[in-house]
Length: 123
Image (cartoon, rainbow, N blue to C red; front, side):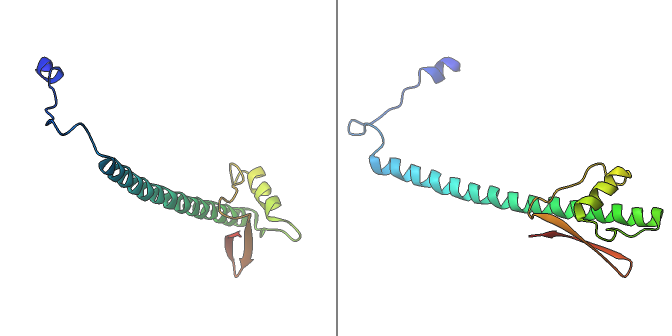
């Protein structure tokens, strides 16, 4: 079987020597369209994964803030404390393993109102 495959010769008519330039250009255009579609799909996946990462970080920070408030009976951020200092305090006290950084924005914002924390990503 392997010998038959290796000895196979393409049968070309006398006038047909190979592919024409137009056929070759058509193949290149088709490959370009496929690459463009694949590139667009991958790029869209990156932006949605960044948003999902930020949403997961927001949930983790909110949970840590709520646990800290219940354990210490103290609201965060404390007066005059920045968000970075608040995250450092949560890490220091063992409520976070490390301070997350936003992927899509510049920093997190934390607000506390009506016994409810709101964490968001600042643009």
